[in-house]
Image (cartoon, rainbow, N blue to C red; front, side, top):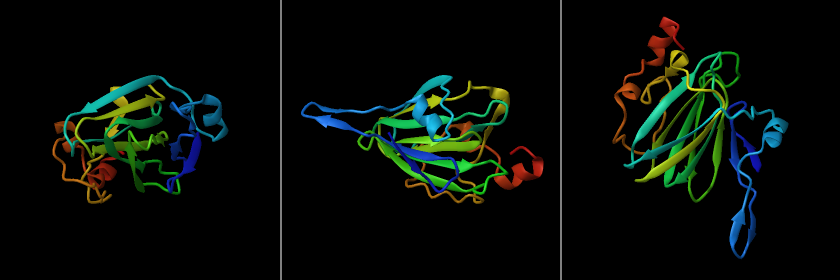
Length: 183
């Protein structure tokens, strides 16, 4: 695996180190020892799969707070997505900054999402499938979210949003959250 640092502290793009021959290729997609060597949390508590029918579908921005904060390793296994993460760690030098990364079935990239990072994505194709390895169990009482269209972050989504859940559409705005202490 090839670990590529992003502009956000502790977040990585993980490219495959492909061993190719006439049949195709073989590559390791996860190795606890390599994750630990890069200072990443290698725990996998759950594996999740999301399938999206329509291009333009948006899911997010989700995270869990301590003591149930999640790490995620996100990979698009069919189609393509624009994956976004926001650093929600007040002590971090990249606090409240975001990046977006295109993950596709063709580029085989994964995005490592550290604890206390909000995560969401928009599908760039119909029939997009996304796999997650998650480092903590889903714990509803610690779940938080950010509005995908919050002017505070001004995320530049590549497409018009064609489908989104009511829950994701109605997360509070960052300005309201910071006043209410629910970040």
